[in-house]
Amino acid sequence: MKVKEVMEKPVFIPQNATKKHILNLVKKYKKTKIFIVVDNKKIFIGDIHEDDLFYMMIPNEYYESIGANLGFDIERKFFARNAKEIMRRHDVSCNENDDVIDAALKLASAEVNEMPVLDKKGRVVGVITQGIILRCMD
Image (tube, rainbow, N blue to C red):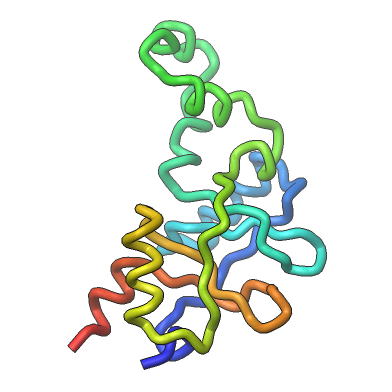
């Protein structure tokens, strides 16, 4: 089975999108857990998981009281101004014509839960997750 047969449609976020724009997309795409950050040619730059966005929601007045317990990465996300500052950077991806088992091995070896699916030109055409692969295995 090929990745293109089971991948999800990606939800794109421009790299300069503000937190407000990102949160509006989260509300619009209620079942989406991973958002793909791309440049203006839809070339993959990074991704933002819904878990990353959670820390943006902590009101400023509460942050100081819990700040000592939060790591640097979480603090960076909280103070980020746009998608490029929030996103996770990694170079794990697969091609839409890859076999699903090969995509599973990439996910496992990179210790990530999801990755973008690219076409021959390097543009994002989908998203594959551990859950998708799990549900399509015989």
